[in-house]
Length: 163
Image (cartoon, rainbow, N blue to C red):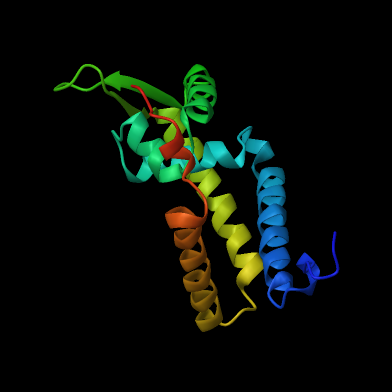
């Protein structure tokens, strides 16, 4: 490394970058620990919540929303289907498309998991002023948009999702 090359920790925004990364890792770790009693992991929760909100979403739409590729979906969905949490049904108009639905058991687990997540959010952010929480959300959404739209390629864009 030459002397003119800057070091990451010398950058004025390095502390912010590291803080975001650590917070994300810790949130995922704590959420995983708290969801363990329901025998689901954070990626499963993301899928369940999206199916709860958007019943009948296609696998491709779900992958796009979650910013994941075909391999992630092809691993998680069969596991969840085998556990009886979700079901895949062919689209009535286009048989090539698979639509995803929660089962009755899946709806129950999702509602329990959302209670766990909501409780964690409240315990974590209760002492932060709402205005700061909203400002943080705005900043993180801009960061995600920047990363998606140029600095990095979207994972879902790398792989064409076949249904």
